[in-house]
Length: 126
Image (cartoon, rainbow, N blue to C red; front, side, top):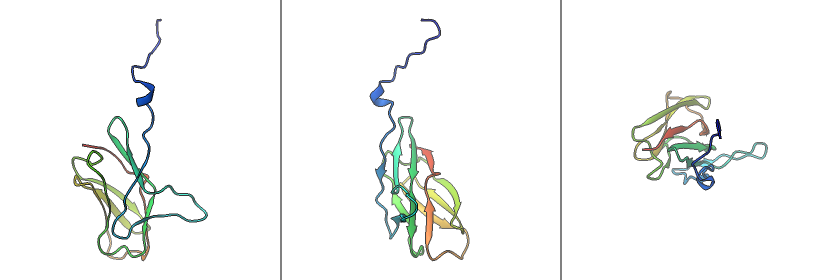
């Protein structure tokens, strides 16, 4: 058939992978409220190696250890990846090759409650 395209990828492997709920650390929790539905903080890896996160993390007092979670082997970048944001204070989220996802505020003044959206984080795993 001229001009026809046929996929060589089996249907079972062409589906979107499921989300895996993250084990949050150091007092961080998934943000939920009665008016807006946010998914729990979770991650997944596509067949092409792209890792993505979803959800919003929150913490009542963001001082102390700001490692939110640790991604398992196979879901980690080979070099540190930095993602900027604000809550409204400017911050960076850094994902290290160790799997740690760390929050770093760029100013000395921070909110008493942090709301950190993770939906913009995408990178290729090592």
